[in-house]
Length: 128
Image (cartoon, rainbow, N blue to C red):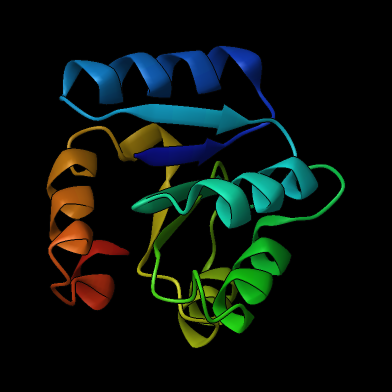
């Protein structure tokens, strides 16, 4: 199961629809706290998380996930509408499996997600 953490309802719906069409099962949350609760209760295979979430931002969700032994190895992809190198570097240091630019991620997302789920290291190549 893929968990999407995204506060924009239209983008969340588009991403959910796209992933379902790609064959993934999906759950969603619209803020970081609800997302963390789902991570802890549902143990998703991967999380696709917006950087700018209400209540708890994407980097804080990532920190909490990596500190919880029961879900620490969950694949985690951060996404942002306006990424920069500092954000990418911070995400990588915290253990993100990748950082995606929202408007350019559609062509890569399925490959990146499948790679993360098969435990291949894809982080450096996919963040540009």
